[in-house]
Image 1: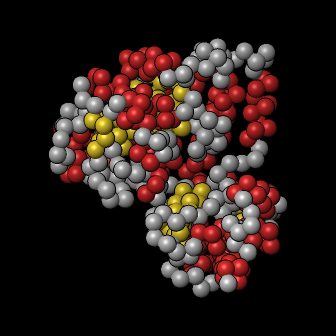
Image 2: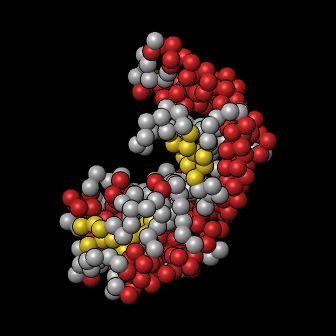
Image 3: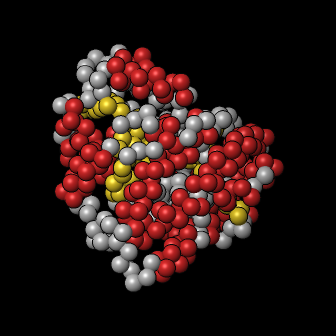
Length: 389
């Protein structure tokens, strides 16, 4: 029976979680289960628990560490990236005198923040392009109205974790400079961009006037974000952080998790990025060999350690098949990830993350598991049809 029939969302989630937890191995698992235990050990080592007080102590240590990693003068810690970027963009609007932000329509503020950029900050957005890629230099030059800030999301997650080439990126930044605009990088996943660009973090961050990075998306932190920029902008950002309610009394568990991620996950990210390429190839080949019509990974060669998988099948069937694979085989391709239908009925997509758990999987392993998944899709489709008859 399809997973949406006869079960509410909580029951389906519990079933999926239990099925994946029982697997002896999982390909797509963004978070390793040992991080929370590691955090408890680190927190205990902090002594009496007063590791920070309204942004000092270990919080300030993390700010200075990240500023150095990115080659920026200073940095401010924020509880969320949404808050960090709203603060950065409104600060730039005040300094440039222009409230218009140029960004991609698939960028995080446009898709995932309920219109907060306009509603809370009073800024206005314009789009250099609607194509599912980062804007080109010519598109930035051809903007029909002046803009104060160009925001570039690296990688552009909702377009498939895509990145431009280094030459394309530098040309786009130069075009913004020609327009007397500042450049802000949404670098939530900037950490894994260095292999694609063949450049260091300071070289990438150095293209911009400010950059935001996340600690939980790739580094396995609990939450938290950092805004790096000049000392003057960071000072203003900290004032706005307080106004936005981001001046928390104690944050050391989150900060210690961020330090741990920088220690352990950051050095491993290039390995994950490299392994994502054969995983994507084997996943596509295995599904095709098992009779799945036109399976597609996007980008065809992943730019980072994350990519999209597209299949011509309803999302409810694919999600049921994912649970069945975990329950029946003890292996899972998708982990707790789920397919959704972004627009065209019967065409579904999900995100694949190649991290530590995926390093155990060879290409042959992925192909075999893809064949198992295809069999489960056939089963799930039959059950759904029978239930609807």
